[in-house]
Length: 396
Image (cartoon, rainbow, N blue to C red; front, side):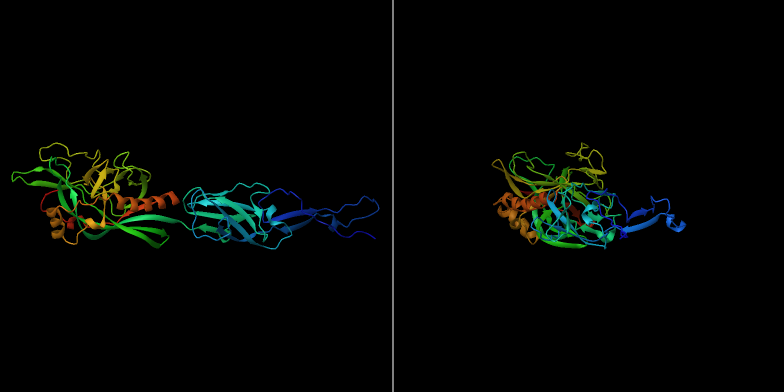
């Protein structure tokens, strides 16, 4: 009996070609010269076999097969292609995985036969993916071309320190620009709430909060009435909508052996950031103020760091500012100006240093920074014309 069947078998290691269909051309020939093949049958027959196009990809999963809602840099996660269009082909022989970073080019991920991708117990096609960069990322699984419908967008959750314009009380700050032997010249300044949140798209999850100063008072010298002429060197963004910064972690500040952390504001990777010029950069006698800006329109190394009364190498210091944001512990914040002044008079403001409280706060910030290799600082705008202006210089 004549064999009237054609058996088509998939290759064990077919070439991995990105195409929607695999096309097969069949031409009928005969070795018997007495057999006449009709003209219509002499034309090649073309068959199209649909590839197993990916319809669904799931993930990220951790190594214990648990679905996670966020990923950490340098850790491995698993993505699974779980649904395909019907096909006679074996999906794992034809599938590709790819990544897209920050809406950039879609780039294929490396495939190692028998290792990555691989089949799990449920016959899902899995890919082990190392999350290398904290950025908005999409993972695709495809046979022909990457499609949005067969992709997973990794939730981008960015830790953020928000320095608000909400006044939480008043504290005492060293007045810069004055040298005194037996006391620390100081002024009363307001404190502001700083919130640490995890930001996921338009949602914010509050983790904790603390308090900072925003002002940076400096004496330009004394006038004819023997009164200090004050300059506020507070950092103010050049434009109201340029108030979001990348945070750079600096261990051991203000000295190399302090064991205290600080966080520098950066914009586009630069520590020199656009700022509104100070009212002046000269003292009353015409000499430059301490550490003037090289360019009045830029401030360098604006930080969040320890403030209040802190200890380094056995010596206590009252924190001041040249334009940074200084941490203040709760016990050194007073509900009114009068209570803050009384604390100075009673000399009980500096009974306890802020070191331990700042370490607790900064350790939590550093932990988030290390976990994500990224952190933002958002500086809420405030009306600088309505800031509290110190009315007297205290002796601490």
